[in-house]
Length: 201
Length: 201
Image 1 (tube, each protein chain N blue to C red):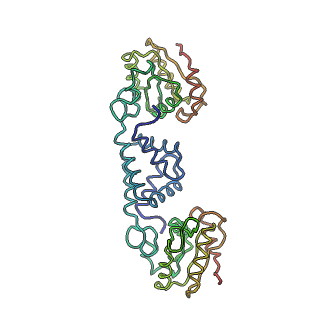
Image 2 (image 1 turned 180 degrees about the vertical axis):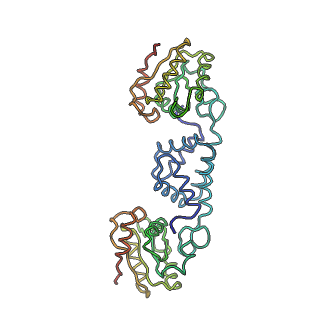
Image 3 (image 1 turned 180 degrees about the horizontal axis):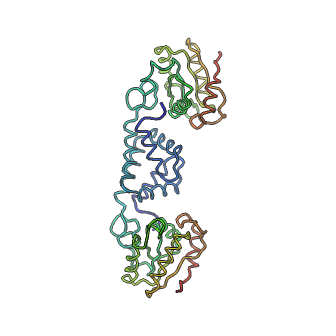
């Protein structure tokens, strides 16, 4: 006998697909679920299904939403006429938590990456340009990562935004090169927002 | 906006109940599940439910089983007339993987711990004594942990087993004091099995 029961082995396998979870952690998690009261595993399974079913993308900014518009876009009248362009939804949460920004967002759900075949038509840039015009936006803050793909994306954004009559800024390089905004401490993100500079042609 | 959507926050909370998972890991796992194809989260949820529903305890040795008897107990005729008493089901897997033991098991699903109110009547000792007689067992190997509760459990086992006409052994102290059998490398477990000594009164 080299393993657990069929269903338990399947659970360990499924859990080990999760990020940062190795086989030992997956085994420990599976045994925990088996040993806990049935409600624990029931409510985890339900939470997974519910989150998947009820989480869609805001039809304006692409951030997570349970309805057509996300909480930020529903609050659009009280928000400043600025759009902060980020790569991932967790970047929105990270910036919101600083309490230093009161504008809108545009989530790209990715970076330009020619090597991976991700070009301008794969990310919602057209929708961003449309929003800048229709929502009468005064400033676009480029908050892509400071790694190579993030800089490529920023360069592209600068290029398509500068012809419009909108102020274009890039958050300051307070953030360490090569790292991802969603994993940075709040103070550093605050400094980066404060130190943003206008982009010249 | 201080958090994600309601359902996503619920998923992060449920995931952070898992052992060794902090809030940051839970967030990363939840976002991974949201971004992956729906089949990924569907099959994880199903694996959790299936493992919980189809995993019961072997009615002989208390190890995991999908039917009345576990694979080891179904194979009882080919196994040696020995019972290795362990605390947790993962200890069975750890010992099986060494390939150095061909007997039966008895899973206690815990340790004696007077401070936590866990006494002899809370663990399946009576069933073990019954098995020793009915299955004509020649040797009982005590393989509880080498921490305080494990030693207390071993002492109790020694006390109730010695009056029976069965050889009682304790796996050797090759395993580091204070650690749990399920987390030890195979070579050390092999040595511990080889070096077991008979218990005297």
